[in-house]
Image (cartoon, rainbow, N blue to C red; front, side):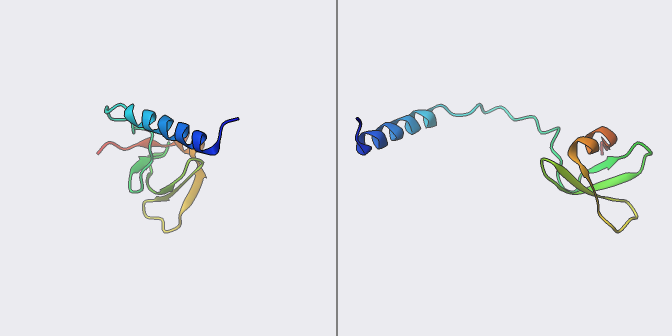
Length: 85
């Protein structure tokens, strides 16, 4: 049976070893990320602005409309296209 001191030492060694192997420095693909303030168009061409986004839900506002709309992220990705500025 290993003592708690031996277990702690082993864990520290494993953590040090993991820290030596840095993550790749190449930039990650952020094209699927929804950032507040980004502009999208729906299938009818109406412009929306992202208010808040999580992994499951997206809150957005139509141009000229004061209330906030909410939709699942999957449905949002199907029905809205990003506007290239």
